[in-house]
Image (tube, rainbow, N blue to C red; front, side):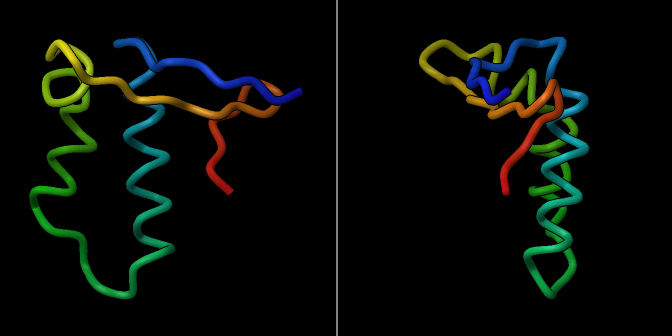
Length: 66
């Protein structure tokens, strides 16, 4: 089953890991320090600031992009 939801603070560790793995597969060069920090500190950079949102797609409870 597919469902879409706004990520909450509890979701960002999983989302950060997923993002880093996906970026490593998609880009043939090393990730920048900024990209790594964005994934590591998603709560501070993207969840807590007002006016920001991250949406996740889940299939059978697992975060997906593909």
